[in-house]
Amino acid sequence: MRVVGGVINDALLVSDEIRLDGIATGNVSVVAGGIFHLYGMCHKDLHVNAGGTAKLMGMVRGNVINDGGTLEVTGTVHGSVSTLRGQTTVSPQAVVVKGVVQAPGDNSQAVGLIGGAALGAAIGGPVGAIVGGVIGALLGKESKGLG
Image (cartoon, rainbow, N blue to C red; front, side):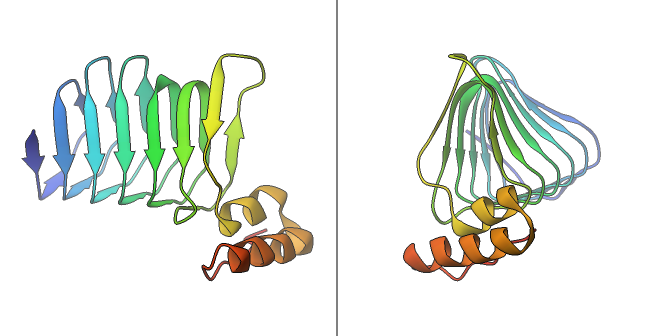
């Protein structure tokens, strides 16, 4: 596994196993055979393509799109997490500000628990704030609905 620190000032294409402890200022794409461990930050979008794997413990400021790979989210996503195809797991500790979206049909599989903040953001408005707070409290984590 390659460990990368510092700032990457361009798009990042992951085709091998990489652990990012630093910051990627552009989009990150994980292709077949690539394994991406994010402990740092991605300032734009993250795309997981067929045969790729991404494990997000850090932060993505944009959106995360799973288009046929394996995605595990335990960190923070300021945008949304969308599963077009593949398998996505969102842990209860994760924060997804704009919600978790699963494509209709049998192409995608979103599994795991969604934290109160993610659910509250997906619902939106005052109801989202209440539902997000209640779910977050049940999960034992302070959570705010961000609607």
